[in-house]
Image 1: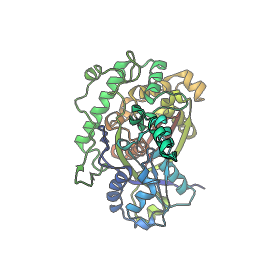
Image 2 (image 1 turned 90 degrees about the vertical axis):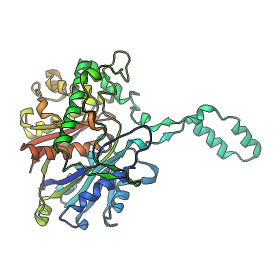
Image 3 (image 1 turned 135 degrees about the horizontal axis):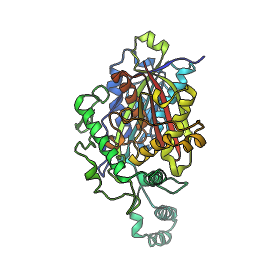
Image 4 (image 1 turned 135 degrees about the vertical axis):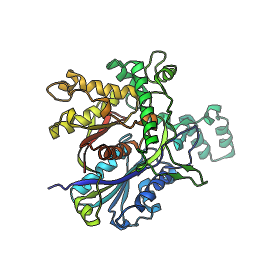
Length: 427
Protein backbone atom coordinates (compact mmCIF):
# COMPACT_ATOMS: atom_id res chain seq x y z
CA UNK A 1 0.00 0.00 0.00
CA UNK A 2 1.14 3.54 -0.74
CA UNK A 3 0.85 6.31 1.81
CA UNK A 4 -0.68 9.78 1.54
CA UNK A 5 1.91 12.51 0.99
CA UNK A 6 1.28 16.17 1.75
CA UNK A 7 2.89 19.52 1.03
CA UNK A 8 2.74 21.12 4.47
CA UNK A 9 4.61 24.36 3.86
CA UNK A 10 6.95 26.13 1.50
CA UNK A 11 8.56 29.42 0.64
CA UNK A 12 10.61 31.10 -2.05
CA UNK A 13 12.93 34.05 -2.33
CA UNK A 14 12.09 37.03 -4.49
CA UNK A 15 13.12 36.36 -8.08
CA UNK A 16 15.88 38.80 -9.06
CA UNK A 17 16.50 39.64 -12.70
CA UNK A 18 20.02 39.09 -13.99
CA UNK A 19 21.55 42.37 -15.08
CA UNK A 20 24.75 41.53 -16.92
CA UNK A 21 26.88 40.64 -13.91
CA UNK A 22 26.83 38.17 -10.99
CA UNK A 23 23.95 38.93 -8.66
CA UNK A 24 24.16 39.25 -4.87
CA UNK A 25 23.51 35.54 -4.20
CA UNK A 26 25.01 32.23 -5.30
CA UNK A 27 22.69 29.22 -5.68
CA UNK A 28 23.41 28.04 -2.13
CA UNK A 29 23.08 31.56 -0.75
CA UNK A 30 19.57 31.68 -2.20
CA UNK A 31 18.67 28.26 -0.83
CA UNK A 32 19.85 29.26 2.65
CA UNK A 33 18.09 32.64 2.56
CA UNK A 34 14.86 30.84 1.66
CA UNK A 35 15.31 27.86 3.99
CA UNK A 36 16.11 29.62 7.26
CA UNK A 37 12.79 31.43 7.78
CA UNK A 38 10.88 28.43 6.47
CA UNK A 39 12.47 26.06 8.99
CA UNK A 40 12.16 28.56 11.84
CA UNK A 41 8.38 28.59 11.56
CA UNK A 42 7.98 24.79 11.72
CA UNK A 43 6.54 22.91 14.70
CA UNK A 44 8.80 19.90 14.24
CA UNK A 45 12.47 19.66 15.26
CA UNK A 46 15.13 19.89 12.56
CA UNK A 47 16.23 16.33 13.21
CA UNK A 48 12.79 15.12 12.09
CA UNK A 49 13.86 15.82 8.50
CA UNK A 50 14.95 12.57 6.86
CA UNK A 51 16.27 13.86 3.54
CA UNK A 52 17.15 17.05 1.66
CA UNK A 53 16.76 17.23 -2.13
CA UNK A 54 17.55 20.33 -4.16
CA UNK A 55 17.23 20.97 -7.88
CA UNK A 56 20.00 23.02 -9.48
CA UNK A 57 21.22 23.16 -13.08
CA UNK A 58 24.01 25.73 -13.23
CA UNK A 59 26.08 24.53 -10.27
CA UNK A 60 29.08 26.73 -9.53
CA UNK A 61 32.51 25.26 -8.77
CA UNK A 62 32.53 26.37 -5.14
CA UNK A 63 29.23 24.62 -4.37
CA UNK A 64 29.40 21.08 -5.71
CA UNK A 65 26.28 19.17 -4.64
CA UNK A 66 24.54 22.37 -3.50
CA UNK A 67 21.92 20.32 -1.65
CA UNK A 68 24.51 19.11 0.84
CA UNK A 69 26.17 22.51 1.17
CA UNK A 70 22.81 24.20 1.76
CA UNK A 71 21.71 21.52 4.22
CA UNK A 72 24.76 22.02 6.39
CA UNK A 73 24.60 25.81 6.18
CA UNK A 74 20.98 25.57 7.31
CA UNK A 75 22.19 23.84 10.45
CA UNK A 76 20.71 20.45 9.65
CA UNK A 77 22.34 17.34 11.03
CA UNK A 78 25.42 15.97 9.32
CA UNK A 79 23.63 12.61 9.36
CA UNK A 80 20.83 13.79 7.03
CA UNK A 81 21.56 12.78 3.42
CA UNK A 82 21.29 15.50 0.78
CA UNK A 83 21.53 15.25 -2.99
CA UNK A 84 21.01 17.46 -6.01
CA UNK A 85 18.68 16.75 -8.94
CA UNK A 86 19.24 17.96 -12.51
CA UNK A 87 16.68 17.57 -15.27
CA UNK A 88 16.99 21.09 -16.68
CA UNK A 89 13.78 23.10 -16.23
CA UNK A 90 12.17 20.26 -14.26
CA UNK A 91 14.84 20.01 -11.55
CA UNK A 92 12.83 21.75 -8.82
CA UNK A 93 9.78 19.62 -9.53
CA UNK A 94 11.93 16.49 -9.69
CA UNK A 95 13.03 17.18 -6.11
CA UNK A 96 9.38 17.18 -5.02
CA UNK A 97 8.59 14.07 -7.02
CA UNK A 98 11.56 12.19 -5.59
CA UNK A 99 10.56 13.22 -2.07
CA UNK A 100 6.99 12.17 -2.83
CA UNK A 101 8.14 8.67 -3.82
CA UNK A 102 10.39 8.26 -0.76
CA UNK A 103 7.54 9.15 1.59
CA UNK A 104 4.90 7.23 -0.37
CA UNK A 105 6.83 3.97 -0.04
CA UNK A 106 7.59 4.50 3.66
CA UNK A 107 11.34 5.20 3.62
CA UNK A 108 10.99 8.83 4.79
CA UNK A 109 8.53 10.83 6.88
CA UNK A 110 9.56 14.47 6.28
CA UNK A 111 11.61 15.70 3.32
CA UNK A 112 12.87 19.17 2.48
CA UNK A 113 12.64 19.47 -1.32
CA UNK A 114 13.57 22.57 -3.28
CA UNK A 115 15.17 24.21 -6.24
CA UNK A 116 17.73 26.98 -6.60
CA UNK A 117 19.41 28.80 -9.44
CA UNK A 118 21.60 31.87 -9.85
CA UNK A 119 21.73 32.24 -13.62
CA UNK A 120 23.64 35.51 -13.22
CA UNK A 121 26.53 33.40 -11.88
CA UNK A 122 26.68 31.17 -14.97
CA UNK A 123 30.36 30.72 -15.81
CA UNK A 124 32.29 32.22 -18.69
CA UNK A 125 33.76 29.41 -20.78
CA UNK A 126 37.02 29.44 -22.74
CA UNK A 127 36.83 28.62 -26.42
CA UNK A 128 38.22 25.21 -27.42
CA UNK A 129 41.16 26.81 -29.17
CA UNK A 130 42.05 28.71 -26.01
CA UNK A 131 41.83 25.54 -23.91
CA UNK A 132 44.19 23.76 -26.31
CA UNK A 133 46.59 26.71 -26.19
CA UNK A 134 46.69 26.70 -22.38
CA UNK A 135 47.28 22.95 -22.48
CA UNK A 136 50.25 23.40 -24.81
CA UNK A 137 51.63 26.19 -22.64
CA UNK A 138 51.18 24.15 -19.47
CA UNK A 139 52.89 21.15 -21.06
CA UNK A 140 55.90 23.06 -22.35
CA UNK A 141 59.08 21.65 -20.80
CA UNK A 142 61.75 24.08 -22.02
CA UNK A 143 62.02 27.81 -22.52
CA UNK A 144 61.95 27.24 -26.28
CA UNK A 145 58.78 25.19 -26.03
CA UNK A 146 57.16 27.90 -23.91
CA UNK A 147 58.12 30.61 -26.41
CA UNK A 148 56.73 28.51 -29.23
CA UNK A 149 53.48 28.00 -27.33
CA UNK A 150 53.23 31.71 -26.49
CA UNK A 151 53.61 32.57 -30.15
CA UNK A 152 50.35 30.74 -30.81
CA UNK A 153 48.32 33.12 -28.64
CA UNK A 154 45.42 34.65 -30.57
CA UNK A 155 43.32 37.64 -29.45
CA UNK A 156 40.06 35.71 -29.60
CA UNK A 157 41.41 33.29 -26.97
CA UNK A 158 40.82 36.09 -24.47
CA UNK A 159 37.15 36.41 -25.40
CA UNK A 160 35.15 33.84 -23.39
CA UNK A 161 31.83 32.30 -24.30
CA UNK A 162 28.88 32.86 -21.98
CA UNK A 163 28.15 29.43 -20.52
CA UNK A 164 24.42 30.13 -20.33
CA UNK A 165 24.22 30.53 -24.10
CA UNK A 166 25.60 27.03 -24.54
CA UNK A 167 23.33 25.68 -21.84
CA UNK A 168 20.24 27.04 -23.55
CA UNK A 169 21.13 25.42 -26.88
CA UNK A 170 20.04 21.85 -27.44
CA UNK A 171 23.07 19.71 -28.36
CA UNK A 172 21.01 17.32 -30.49
CA UNK A 173 19.01 19.72 -32.65
CA UNK A 174 21.41 22.67 -32.27
CA UNK A 175 18.38 24.89 -31.72
CA UNK A 176 18.31 27.26 -28.78
CA UNK A 177 15.21 27.24 -26.61
CA UNK A 178 13.78 30.34 -28.27
CA UNK A 179 14.05 28.70 -31.66
CA UNK A 180 12.10 25.68 -30.44
CA UNK A 181 9.35 28.10 -29.42
CA UNK A 182 9.44 29.52 -32.93
CA UNK A 183 8.93 26.01 -34.29
CA UNK A 184 5.79 25.66 -32.17
CA UNK A 185 4.56 29.12 -33.17
CA UNK A 186 4.81 28.00 -36.82
CA UNK A 187 3.19 24.58 -36.27
CA UNK A 188 0.24 25.94 -34.29
CA UNK A 189 -0.15 29.26 -36.12
CA UNK A 190 0.50 31.44 -33.08
CA UNK A 191 0.23 35.12 -33.96
CA UNK A 192 2.73 37.64 -32.62
CA UNK A 193 -0.07 39.84 -31.24
CA UNK A 194 -1.45 36.89 -29.25
CA UNK A 195 1.97 36.12 -27.76
CA UNK A 196 2.45 39.77 -26.80
CA UNK A 197 -1.04 39.99 -25.29
CA UNK A 198 -0.36 36.87 -23.22
CA UNK A 199 2.94 38.32 -21.98
CA UNK A 200 1.36 41.61 -20.99
CA UNK A 201 -1.33 39.76 -19.05
CA UNK A 202 1.33 37.80 -17.16
CA UNK A 203 2.87 41.06 -15.96
CA UNK A 204 -0.54 42.43 -14.97
CA UNK A 205 -1.40 39.34 -12.96
CA UNK A 206 1.91 39.29 -11.09
CA UNK A 207 1.68 43.02 -10.36
CA UNK A 208 -1.83 42.52 -9.00
CA UNK A 209 -0.69 39.59 -6.85
CA UNK A 210 2.16 41.67 -5.45
CA UNK A 211 -0.20 44.53 -4.65
CA UNK A 212 -2.97 42.51 -3.00
CA UNK A 213 -0.70 40.38 -0.80
CA UNK A 214 -1.17 37.11 -2.68
CA UNK A 215 2.55 36.36 -2.36
CA UNK A 216 2.82 37.50 1.26
CA UNK A 217 2.96 34.01 2.79
CA UNK A 218 5.00 32.59 -0.07
CA UNK A 219 7.87 35.02 -0.61
CA UNK A 220 10.45 35.53 2.16
CA UNK A 221 12.91 38.46 2.02
CA UNK A 222 16.58 37.83 1.24
CA UNK A 223 19.50 39.80 2.68
CA UNK A 224 22.85 39.82 0.90
CA UNK A 225 26.23 39.73 2.61
CA UNK A 226 26.70 43.46 2.07
CA UNK A 227 23.40 44.22 3.78
CA UNK A 228 21.23 44.65 0.70
CA UNK A 229 17.59 43.70 1.26
CA UNK A 230 15.35 42.16 -1.41
CA UNK A 231 11.67 41.67 -0.68
CA UNK A 232 9.91 41.44 -4.04
CA UNK A 233 10.32 40.07 -7.55
CA UNK A 234 12.05 42.83 -9.49
CA UNK A 235 11.46 41.90 -13.13
CA UNK A 236 7.77 42.77 -13.13
CA UNK A 237 6.62 45.57 -15.45
CA UNK A 238 3.12 46.61 -14.31
CA UNK A 239 2.72 49.03 -17.22
CA UNK A 240 3.54 46.42 -19.86
CA UNK A 241 1.02 46.24 -22.69
CA UNK A 242 0.75 44.50 -26.04
CA UNK A 243 1.20 47.75 -27.96
CA UNK A 244 4.60 48.40 -26.36
CA UNK A 245 5.67 44.77 -26.69
CA UNK A 246 4.83 44.85 -30.41
CA UNK A 247 7.70 47.31 -30.94
CA UNK A 248 10.34 44.76 -29.90
CA UNK A 249 12.31 42.93 -32.57
CA UNK A 250 12.20 39.13 -32.80
CA UNK A 251 15.03 37.68 -30.75
CA UNK A 252 15.78 34.49 -32.69
CA UNK A 253 14.19 34.47 -36.17
CA UNK A 254 14.36 37.90 -37.79
CA UNK A 255 12.47 39.55 -39.24
CA UNK A 256 9.30 37.45 -39.00
CA UNK A 257 9.75 35.56 -35.73
CA UNK A 258 7.12 35.59 -32.98
CA UNK A 259 9.46 35.25 -29.96
CA UNK A 260 10.93 38.41 -28.42
CA UNK A 261 12.63 39.32 -25.17
CA UNK A 262 9.29 40.76 -24.06
CA UNK A 263 7.22 37.60 -24.51
CA UNK A 264 9.85 35.20 -23.14
CA UNK A 265 10.74 34.27 -19.58
CA UNK A 266 13.44 36.37 -17.96
CA UNK A 267 16.92 35.22 -16.90
CA UNK A 268 16.62 35.27 -13.14
CA UNK A 269 18.06 34.17 -9.78
CA UNK A 270 15.85 32.60 -7.13
CA UNK A 271 15.20 29.65 -4.80
CA UNK A 272 12.16 27.75 -3.54
CA UNK A 273 11.65 25.06 -0.88
CA UNK A 274 8.71 22.82 -0.06
CA UNK A 275 8.27 20.56 2.96
CA UNK A 276 6.65 17.20 2.29
CA UNK A 277 5.32 14.97 5.04
CA UNK A 278 3.58 11.65 5.49
CA UNK A 279 0.14 11.36 7.07
CA UNK A 280 1.81 9.93 10.16
CA UNK A 281 4.19 12.92 10.46
CA UNK A 282 1.28 15.31 9.98
CA UNK A 283 -0.55 13.70 12.91
CA UNK A 284 2.56 13.39 15.11
CA UNK A 285 3.58 17.04 14.85
CA UNK A 286 0.17 18.63 14.36
CA UNK A 287 1.05 19.92 10.90
CA UNK A 288 -1.47 21.67 8.66
CA UNK A 289 -1.17 20.42 5.07
CA UNK A 290 -1.70 22.73 2.13
CA UNK A 291 -2.26 20.05 -0.49
CA UNK A 292 -1.95 16.35 -1.11
CA UNK A 293 0.15 15.07 -4.02
CA UNK A 294 -2.00 12.60 -5.94
CA UNK A 295 0.17 11.70 -8.91
CA UNK A 296 3.08 12.77 -11.09
CA UNK A 297 4.31 12.07 -14.59
CA UNK A 298 7.38 12.68 -16.76
CA UNK A 299 7.09 12.64 -20.53
CA UNK A 300 9.46 13.06 -23.46
CA UNK A 301 9.32 14.04 -27.13
CA UNK A 302 11.38 15.48 -30.00
CA UNK A 303 13.75 18.13 -28.56
CA UNK A 304 12.87 20.54 -31.39
CA UNK A 305 9.33 20.79 -29.98
CA UNK A 306 10.32 20.56 -26.33
CA UNK A 307 7.74 23.22 -25.46
CA UNK A 308 4.95 20.63 -25.77
CA UNK A 309 6.35 18.81 -22.72
CA UNK A 310 3.38 19.90 -20.56
CA UNK A 311 0.99 18.23 -22.99
CA UNK A 312 2.69 14.82 -23.01
CA UNK A 313 3.23 14.83 -19.23
CA UNK A 314 -0.12 16.20 -18.04
CA UNK A 315 -2.29 14.06 -20.32
CA UNK A 316 -1.38 10.75 -18.61
CA UNK A 317 -2.39 12.25 -15.25
CA UNK A 318 -5.82 12.98 -16.66
CA UNK A 319 -6.09 9.51 -18.18
CA UNK A 320 -5.02 7.63 -15.02
CA UNK A 321 -7.30 9.74 -12.85
CA UNK A 322 -10.27 9.49 -15.21
CA UNK A 323 -10.34 13.29 -15.31
CA UNK A 324 -11.33 15.83 -17.93
CA UNK A 325 -9.95 19.34 -18.30
CA UNK A 326 -13.06 20.61 -16.52
CA UNK A 327 -12.13 18.55 -13.46
CA UNK A 328 -8.92 20.56 -13.05
CA UNK A 329 -9.69 23.82 -11.28
CA UNK A 330 -6.29 25.48 -11.64
CA UNK A 331 -3.26 25.04 -13.88
CA UNK A 332 0.29 26.27 -13.40
CA UNK A 333 2.03 25.93 -16.75
CA UNK A 334 5.51 27.41 -16.58
CA UNK A 335 5.82 30.28 -19.03
CA UNK A 336 9.07 29.57 -20.82
CA UNK A 337 7.72 31.51 -23.82
CA UNK A 338 4.28 32.94 -24.49
CA UNK A 339 4.16 31.21 -27.88
CA UNK A 340 5.02 27.90 -26.22
CA UNK A 341 2.20 28.21 -23.66
CA UNK A 342 -0.28 29.10 -26.40
CA UNK A 343 0.91 26.15 -28.49
CA UNK A 344 0.25 23.79 -25.57
CA UNK A 345 -3.30 25.14 -25.29
CA UNK A 346 -3.82 24.67 -29.02
CA UNK A 347 -2.48 21.12 -28.85
CA UNK A 348 -5.06 20.18 -26.19
CA UNK A 349 -7.77 21.57 -28.46
CA UNK A 350 -6.49 19.69 -31.52
CA UNK A 351 -8.31 16.43 -32.25
CA UNK A 352 -5.44 14.94 -34.27
CA UNK A 353 -2.86 15.59 -31.54
CA UNK A 354 -5.13 14.23 -28.82
CA UNK A 355 -6.02 11.10 -30.79
CA UNK A 356 -2.73 10.17 -32.43
CA UNK A 357 -0.23 11.43 -29.85
CA UNK A 358 -2.04 11.35 -26.52
CA UNK A 359 -4.34 8.38 -27.11
CA UNK A 360 -7.67 10.04 -26.32
CA UNK A 361 -10.89 9.63 -28.28
CA UNK A 362 -10.94 13.28 -29.31
CA UNK A 363 -9.79 16.76 -28.41
CA UNK A 364 -9.38 17.31 -24.67
CA UNK A 365 -10.80 20.82 -24.86
CA UNK A 366 -9.94 24.31 -23.71
CA UNK A 367 -8.25 25.52 -20.54
CA UNK A 368 -10.02 28.74 -19.59
CA UNK A 369 -7.79 31.75 -18.95
CA UNK A 370 -9.22 32.18 -15.46
CA UNK A 371 -7.83 28.73 -14.55
CA UNK A 372 -4.36 29.15 -16.06
CA UNK A 373 -1.46 30.85 -14.24
CA UNK A 374 -3.95 32.90 -12.29
CA UNK A 375 -1.26 34.99 -10.59
CA UNK A 376 1.03 35.33 -13.60
CA UNK A 377 4.14 33.38 -14.40
CA UNK A 378 7.72 33.26 -15.56
CA UNK A 379 7.37 35.90 -18.27
CA UNK A 380 6.93 38.44 -15.49
CA UNK A 381 8.65 36.63 -12.60
CA UNK A 382 11.55 35.03 -14.44
CA UNK A 383 12.65 31.44 -14.88
CA UNK A 384 15.54 30.38 -12.61
CA UNK A 385 15.79 27.03 -14.32
CA UNK A 386 16.36 24.69 -11.39
CA UNK A 387 13.77 26.50 -9.27
CA UNK A 388 10.72 27.04 -11.46
CA UNK A 389 9.21 23.55 -11.15
CA UNK A 390 9.31 23.89 -7.39
CA UNK A 391 7.82 27.38 -7.44
CA UNK A 392 4.85 26.49 -9.64
CA UNK A 393 4.03 23.42 -7.52
CA UNK A 394 4.18 25.43 -4.30
CA UNK A 395 2.16 28.26 -5.77
CA UNK A 396 -0.46 25.88 -7.12
CA UNK A 397 -0.90 24.39 -3.64
CA UNK A 398 -1.30 27.85 -2.14
CA UNK A 399 -3.66 29.01 -4.90
CA UNK A 400 -5.94 26.00 -4.44
CA UNK A 401 -6.26 26.74 -0.74
CA UNK A 402 -6.64 30.50 -1.14
CA UNK A 403 -9.33 30.21 -3.84
CA UNK A 404 -11.17 27.29 -2.28
CA UNK A 405 -10.54 25.00 -5.25
CA UNK A 406 -10.09 21.23 -5.25
CA UNK A 407 -7.64 20.00 -7.92
CA UNK A 408 -4.77 21.45 -9.86
CA UNK A 409 -1.94 20.45 -12.19
CA UNK A 410 1.51 22.04 -12.23
CA UNK A 411 3.47 21.33 -15.39
CA UNK A 412 6.45 22.54 -17.41
CA UNK A 413 8.39 22.00 -20.58
CA UNK A 414 11.99 20.84 -20.15
CA UNK A 415 14.94 21.62 -22.40
CA UNK A 416 16.05 18.51 -24.25
CA UNK A 417 12.52 17.45 -25.12
CA UNK A 418 10.84 16.47 -21.85
CA UNK A 419 8.00 17.55 -19.59
CA UNK A 420 6.92 17.11 -15.99
CA UNK A 421 3.52 17.35 -14.28
CA UNK A 422 2.10 16.96 -10.79
CA UNK A 423 -1.53 16.50 -9.79
CA UNK A 424 -2.46 18.11 -6.47
CA UNK A 425 -5.60 18.10 -4.38
CA UNK A 426 -6.33 20.73 -1.74
CA UNK A 427 -5.91 19.32 1.76
